[in-house]
Length: 425
Image 1 (spheres, one colour):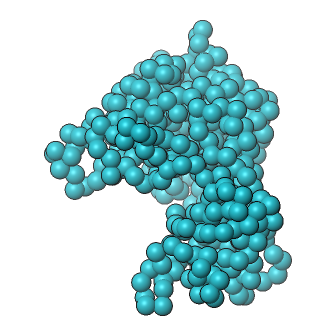
Image 2 (image 1 turned 90 degrees about the horizontal axis):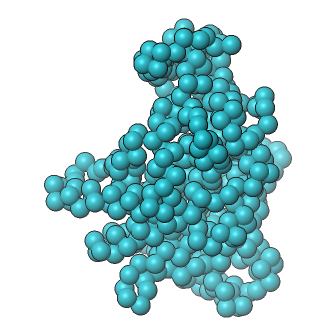
Image 3 (image 1 turned 180 degrees about the horizontal axis):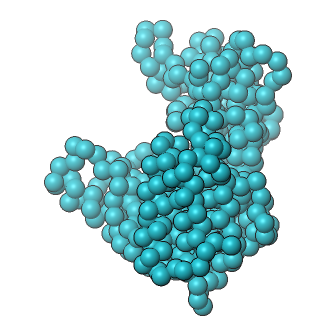
């Protein structure tokens, strides 16, 4: 089974360095010859951007996509993000077509929507298309690239993956810029029709099939969102839970936890005069960090963020559930009281390195909350709701009885502490 291409090797056995691809293609020596046809990508871009490809300076590979830097006869530089997996390849085991198509459409709409907010620095999307699944058995590698999703962007100045090369002062400068971008995204006013179209679609699994009330930026809807999510995740005793391949079913412990959670939900949703701030809709990037930014250097040798890209894991949530995580070489997060914290520390970190790393979340969140003080308020006010939401998000299908048993025990503890008496209706 496969879900993406391996990175190609050259005839001498070395990994392809990603350079001079156009010359290799024209000489009949494309390193991708047994994976996909580069000339078809060139043809598609030329036809849709009305310019000739004159050079391909660099090709890189991410977890799911190739990044192909192309120079055009119009003078524009573009980056084509082409999927490393083709839905038509034999034994394809990646994201199915019904997942990929709305994902591409959502991302394209996000790029278009955020062009009205230049402070967010969303990349400029020039062309995109969804993957196409051919009919019939998949017996041999595809002869085309139709089964790979494709997005083409105007290339902004700068490079990514530069964090490790920056000095402490440069890192501090970049963290402040990232905080301003994140604050602008948090404060962006999501159009109601956009939220209605995409909120349920972009929920993490397991999704409710629908909501019993209209999608709206209100406390009532947030309670409905939680309730529907719990109902979709934990059904009745004996029903499947999680993913089909895991062959797990709802047991008595998970079923009891469900009732405890449903009972608790209305009592952990903050109420008051600032409900309009806590429950308004926010677009979360889903993978916010320096690895998804282009960074240039200004005249004073200070880093300058020029573009924020890869919104394919984005979602729409009430502000009270927005995740402020910022990824560098570690993850910059907050605790339940909005105090700066760290996760994903390397095991080999030294005391001196830890001292430096520990300054990053303080710098980042101080700048973020200065620009978006309501963000800090929403994290503090919604700590119980956030605990439950992120616990649901982070479950990967393992040991549902134990996992939801622990979550149910937490719910019962909070029920006692909050003196909740009424039953679920």
